[in-house]
Structures are given as C-alpha cells and as structure tokens.
Image 1: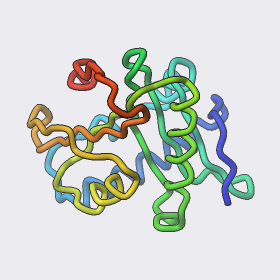
Image 2: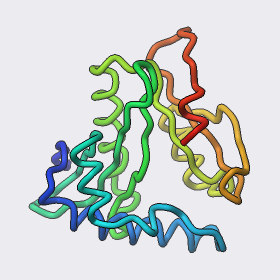
Image 3: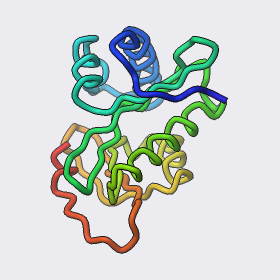
Length: 168
C-alpha cells in the first residue's frame, strides 16, 4: 500500500530522477534511436507541470516511488503523460495504484475520457494499458515511431471530440 497525493515543488527532484530512469528503460527496451521528450525534460519543466497541471505521486515510507501527470485538454478529455515508476518498484502494484487514483480523480472532475500516447511496439506497456481498460483508438507516425493513442472511457456512449488529443 502506497500513499498517493498531489505532488508539490519539493517532489520535483525525485520525480525528475524517477522519470529519467523509467524512460531510459523504455528507450532501452525498444532499442530506440529516436529521442523522447521525457529524456530532455528539466526540473523546471516538472515544476511548471506541478503548478499548471495535476501531478500525482506515490510514496512509501517517505520514498517517492512513482508519478504521473494529467493535463486538461478540454472539458471532456484528460491527457495522461509522464507515467513513471521507480525501476526497482516495477511489478509491485505501485503503478496500478497510482493509475487507479488518477482515474478516480478524473472521474470526480467530470472528464469523459482519459487519453495517452505510447509506442505501439512496447508490447509489455500496451498489454498493461489494455489490462487497465484502455484501448487503442488510433496510431500515427508523427514522432518517428508508431505511436498509439490509448483511451479509457469514463462515461459510456458519450460523443467526445478527440481533436485535442491528436495534437499531443
């Protein structure tokens, strides 16, 4: 069991370190030769996200174990990004708890859908999102790899304009 909360500026350094390690593993697992924006992010970028968007963090015994970020793209669409768990904590439920918390917060805020992008060739991650009831809406090659837009519907049978998610 972890404690999950809205991150504060004091958490920026730990979020930075976890994000760098998690996304380095992502790149390594894909043998990628392209750059991910997560790898060039600065601590200042994280501080801006903490101020502007929703940044949730998971902690246990005073140690930050993971974080994710949610941006409001429209009244209906939340965008999940920079989901990262300490590489020493993978497959221990930290990510699942963190994601479940973020989903509940998005429901409370009245979002109809949560959108995210990931590399469609990262099978382990794609299976993870399928297991969390996300599905692939579409793919594109805008960043030099096959990028899948995953969605999790929070409101059934609602017609949602996803144009804002395509731009991310």
